[in-house]
Image (cartoon, rainbow, N blue to C red):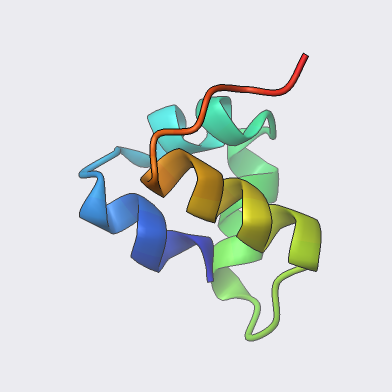
Length: 55
């Protein structure tokens, strides 16, 4: 779930959605799922480790 990695960063939902490049509604749907698409999980891990955005 995206929440675990982003909670460690103490991000609010709006900030987490923005950093992942998704809408707040999409982020909410991702939080409610038991399985999250791999690319979202990788993006969350990258954010948690402080990697810069891809160009």
